[in-house]
Amino acid sequence: MADLEVYDFKNHFGNGILSCAAVGGVATKPEYRRGGSVRAMFNYLFEDAPKQGWDISILYPFSEEYYQKFGYYAISDKMYMEADFRCLESIPRCMGAVLYDGSQSEILYDLYNRIAKKYSLAFFRNSDKYFNTDYRKDLKFTYLWKNDKGEFKAYVNCEFNRSESKVIVNEIGFLDKEAMLGILGFLRTFDGNYKTIAFMNVPVNTPIYLNMINPTLVVRKISNNGAVRVFNLMKVLELNIYPSAPGSFVFESTDDVTKGVYSVTYGGGEVKVSRTDSGNADVVLDSIAISRYIIGGISGGFEALSYDSHIKVINENEDFLRAFPKRNTFFTDGY
Picture 1 (tube, rainbow, N blue to C red):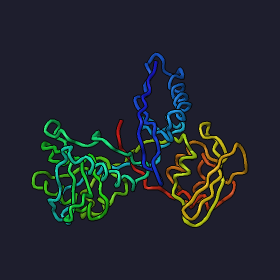
Picture 2: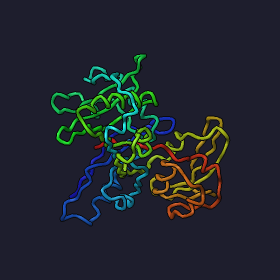
Picture 3: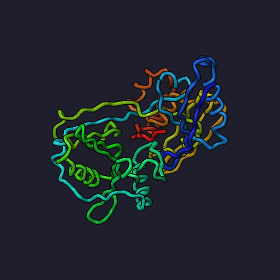
Picture 4: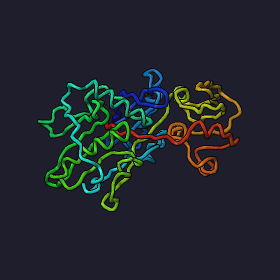
């Protein structure tokens, strides 16, 4: 009647790793649509999550409105950016990159995961699934960039479209400014053969754009980055990074999966989290608000929250705001 596929992933979050149920392949045969099949499968997924050890779930929605019915909410965006190569002329060309052939896997996985830790919910990787090794067959390449000290600090997945005179960057990662300039300088070595460079998936606030000397020659398109749902709210709260200054707050979850009243006390690098069935809360959140604010972070203060129908503010406890600043969230792994 219907189908739903679930894959096991791990995601960087706060001080650790969350186990993720990655959902894909959701479909119903036409003759069974609007009969509750998908709802039944999601209900089974939610019941099965604790047994499987899943803390969160991520999917890429064809309709955000549709998946909000199941508690999923899109908490970040990704950007497509295409530029004339002349926009990078202020960056010196650099030859410090080596072609990845699979033999440097430990270096690449370690480098990727160090970069991924800078982004909330970036997927943990320990295989070549998202890197290119069979470049002679598929003409897709992964390069590792290292500085003059021999330190590997950036990577890029790319391919080349001669008919459109375009370098296509499917993925790019760097540890710091030196690494960013180095890997962009390497990509500039192709500007003698190609007119434009396209970055398929980068964060909306990518520093690459800040180094474009002529923004009028840059095209940017923003799209949804994926939707998140929380299963294990205790784990999320425990891994969250809190301010060093002491604070405490209480909030209630009305979500059927995470229902309860959660008390959080933090300070000095430590956190204590407890859950009860009832109690007095500073704020009340449903599943959408949990994804939006507990996972994604808060901006705009209590005034902004007052406009959101998914959250009810009872007591304007500033410790709640300080605990969940707006996060640098980014993930693009397809499945």
